[in-house]
Structures are given as structure tokens and as C-alpha cells.
Image (cartoon, rainbow, N blue to C red):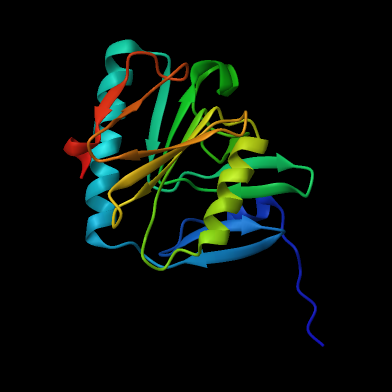
Length: 183
């Protein structure tokens, strides 16, 4: 019988970046396959629009590249999730600055771009994790369907089609991204 050793978020950080995308779930390292070209292109487009908005308006940092967030959840107090894109307001940053290591707590906005191999149950668990840890908005981008589902902490969700636009709502006031420019 094999016994697995749980690791902490700090031990996970010390593993280094490596050449695979990883998250820490229930004390175990979960590796994810590299993403494809469409995923990379859509991630880049959304990141650029978010970063341009935050550069003009201020208020926080936009992060891309699987930055780790330690989500203190009752069912897994050191869960580390790494959204494709995240916005973190200045008031959520320790002393107003980005740390060298993982960020503590959820981003204000987490964006996940789906890949064909993503498991729908895993994606819903990610949404739940982000929202329960304090995210104010979660966007799930589905390239094949050309849709984005917007999730909020109150439990509401809205499916946006490519003829509609993403809005920053209270998280990023004034942000407006026509999905026709993303897809």
C-alpha cells in the first residue's frame, strides 16, 4: 500500500517553476498538459485588454502565466490554483506590492481559458474554489463554443455569446471587451 505525502504551499513553491503547469490540490501536486495555440492566442488577447484598462485606470495588477494563489479553503487550507489570467486589486496585495512567491488569497478576477482536454467537473471545482476564497468575478472562456460564462459570488452566472461583451462590473469599472474582438 502506497502512502502519499502531502506537501504545503511553501514546499510546493520551493519545487520551482519546472516545465509543466501545476497546481496543489489536497496537498498533492497536479500536473496539467501544456496549452495549445488557440488557448495562448485568446489568453493573450484578454490579458492585453485587461492590462490596457488597468494601465489607464490603475487599481491593481493584471497577471498572466499561471501565477499561484494560495486559497485558504475549509476543505483544503493550502490549495494553490493558477488561473490563466488574474486581476488583483492593490488592497489585496501585501503592502500594495506583488510578492516574489505565491499570492495569498483569491484574485479579484480569475480567468480560465478552456482546453479541449479540460474536465467539466474540474472546471466547476476551480470556479467554486475561487469564489469561496473571495474572488469577485470568474470568467470561463470556452473557445470552441465561442462563449464566456461569468460567475459571481452570489451564485449567479451568465453565458455571453460572441455578439456580447465582457464587462468589468464593480471589479474593473468601465472595462468593456467585445467578444467579437476576442474570438
